[in-house]
Length: 135
Picture 1 (cartoon, rainbow, N blue to C red):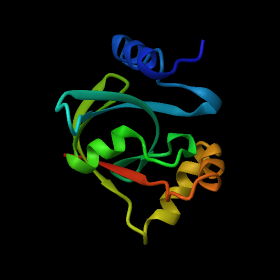
Picture 2 (spheres, rainbow, N blue to C red; picture 1 turned 135 degrees about the vertical axis):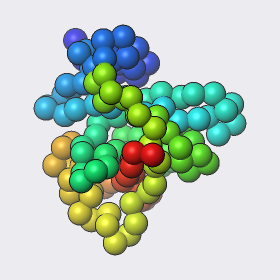
Picture 3 (cartoon, rainbow, N blue to C red; picture 1 turned 30 degrees about the horizontal axis):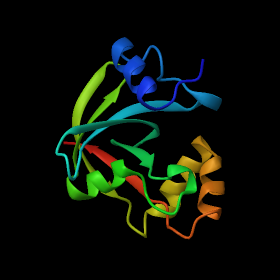
């Protein structure tokens, strides 16, 4: 069974990633917890990720929608986030990749999930790569 959305988050958390860490086409998933920019409540999302050096990369694609995902808007308002990778949970600081580093980081993420390139082609928005550094 393929997990999506809130069910993915719940099963991942309940099993420390035994269900939900490995996803489609060999991708791996982390749980990102942001603070809602209006509600100030925790908001959790299951996201494809790749490690990169001492950090982790995720993409604010929203499937190529014209607007970025809410989780990205939340971390722009408050970059202090929580990350869960399998059973490991830690604080992190999120930042958008700079224009200089984005081409390399984008390629890492497109190799992980080739559909990201299609998402970028269908939107005028520059899809952000987010760097999560342990905090």
